[in-house]
Length: 240
Image (cartoon, rainbow, N blue to C red; front, side, top):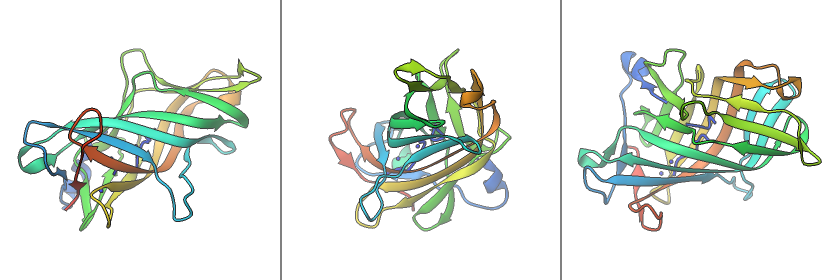
């Protein structure tokens, strides 16, 4: 949305917030990266996760009953600064979505326009498993959508090559839901499952929904960490 990270992806996407859980007694549990010195940068790639049948997870944004966006492939590229002991307290992920359909139309284009998802230090659920929670209070939310000034994520279905409408998701803090990440048993990668709710969107006309703050994003992703920007030298990344 990266054991590899299952995300944003809108939700995915792309995020500040384990404070609320911590206040209730839960412990923060940052990602730990191996093979990168403090002050260095870890580079992260997240891809659509496949199930035991080899089928890819479909990333879905439901804006209202009967109106949804589905993308068969999601790719997330991100980076984070590594602290002492290999600890990563927050990360920024830039999403890409392809193979999309939307609102009953077979073809849709998703333009991210530089928007990213930011995740802050997650809360430990159990050994090797953590969660990021969204909250209506941006001060404690662990999930945020960040966009350049004046930019939004734009979802445009087309019919015979002509734009039908555009739904847009701008900078915000989703108000509910979570991402759950788990260490992979067989490799130093991470998988995550996203169910992020309370996503605000706007629409140019009713074909893309009426707009509001009730959209819901779901999708699974696998993330891998690398020590170089070219994403060719893999390093381990896990939760304790």
